Image (cartoon, rainbow over all chains, first blue to last red; front, side):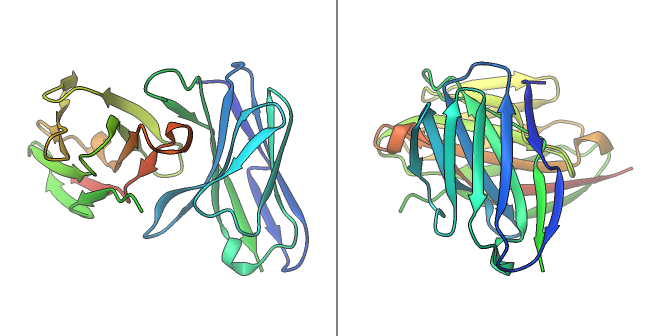
Length: 113
Length: 114
């Protein structure tokens, strides 16, 4: 295992509530990513971070924000959850040297009712 | 918009069959092509990374080839076993992509019947 944990692993929430997902790594990798996985879409990049306090948007960033105050933690926040954000969320880490091989966390299943 | 296509979407084979599937990607500004194996209820696991035209990689019964000039990669599984059942993802990165991010295909779901 690449030393990546995600919390919570499962969450059910209601529309309009704020939700924060946490990704924690013990590998000291510089790059961290948040993806969502939906049937028929594969993995889509939400946001990524290339260092502490350095983040950027991915393909499907609307409705999400992120923060990285220390190397080991990357937080994904849904300010006001909607049913369209029901998904499985994966965190990944990378050294981003050369080929950017990414290692994935176990995933968080989020259901927004 | 860069697009990565995988075919077929799904595949059902009998134990012992050999199979292959395709990943197509833009051939311009190619940097690397990744294959991941993704079992249900688990996280994607890296299989191969290839960077050079003509690269071939092998891990046990699974192998992959790369053609960067025409923009495709093949993944082969020889003598499929039920434990090979998974979704196989390919991902592409290019020089021009922001921070070299990976662009994933939708995957090929393989089911191997005993």
